Image (cartoon, rainbow, N blue to C red; front, side, top):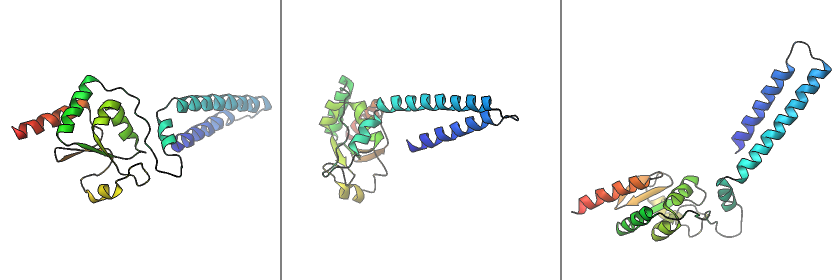
Length: 179
């Protein structure tokens, strides 16, 4: 991210100042400082490149790239557990839906937590106007959606990422209300 790059650059400048800032500056100390700075910079760049290439955020960046048509969310790669599938069936019965945006990393993490099969059973409302199958007007009209993801479960709204335990609690509460 840009903030990380700025932070790394500031750190390198401070290191350079600390190395060069000795009372007597000789040609050898400057050469040693510069070579250390170069080696440190190359190591930091290699580490940054490696971390970036293995991050799930790469999918988000790819999804947000400019195209002529609607933008698709990154693919859900996780397989649903038996528990996630059972919870998805119960959520489906309660007419639940997830409000989100294709570019939202928390929405992506939520989808990954449930898995591909479970998310395929649930209604997803795309709230970004650039997103595929966008329902931005529906999201703007609904004042109960403060951010993404927000879950509507049995008529109640739950903002933020939810764990499987959270979902189970909401399902249990809804079942108590109907009995």
